[in-house]
Image 1 (spheres, helix red, strand yellow):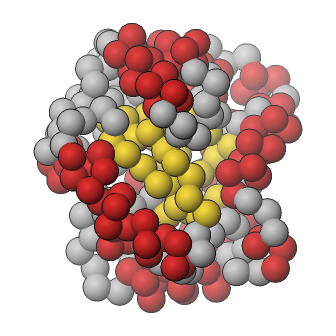
Image 2: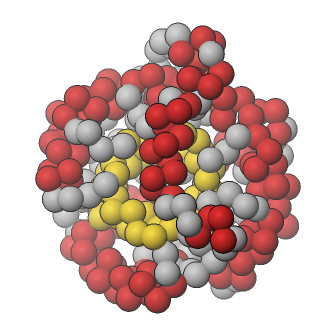
Amino acid sequence: MSPEKSQTRVYDSLLSIERERGGFFLLLVDPDRSSIAEVTPLVIAASECGVDALLIGTSFLLRPDFHASLGRIRELTTLPIVLFPGGAGQVSPHADAILFMSLVSGRNPNYLIDEQVRGAPFVKAAGLEPIPTAYMLIESGSYSSVEYVSGTRPIPRTKGDLAAAHALAAEMLGMKMIYLEAGSGARLSVPPDMIRDVRRETRLPIIVGGGIMSPDEAAGKINAGASGVVVGTRFESPQSAQLLAEFARACHPRQHGAKYVTITAVEGEGR
């Protein structure tokens, strides 16, 4: 970790980017889906294409070289690295921060508090910045890995009031961020109407991920009230740096002008 990065809290930095650019863009790297050799060009390109931070994590860690791979990613980029862990075993000192998540949409105690208790000493020992995050699974039209691993059901995509109530409870409990997650490779992404419902009830930053397949769709999430967008699966096959830059521009409407500020594309059912 460079001295510059160690002096800047990742959470505050993301909020500053949202204020200045209208939103932030997080690139998810899943160590179960891609080897370090496969993601190296993408990680290098991310720094040059407007990505604001890297998320590293997976629902169910299968590869034995997670920590070594994360160390290599640390060498490749000066971007903030934020852990997006599926469990306590995905804590590493090679990152800058961690989404310290509670799966508030489910009722499985393992993911509400047990994994957090197991992981907290390792987070402290690694010197990571914890970002307390309310993690909420949203129905996506397919059965996701995180549903299977966590043994929980997602919030129905038509129940924005339920999502908003969960987000409000998370804010009252002192959490700092809301993560609305449709799941990796989701058929349907989180609906804009649900994002608006959550935004009306909470002042917390909202990040949205899962099933976001185009820059226009990413811009739609920001316009609906998301603070940031997470994309990962879209770039797991070879993609041009130009497309990555397009996603970044879509998530930074104040920086890149009217094209993405005015998008009101209809997203959702039956795509």
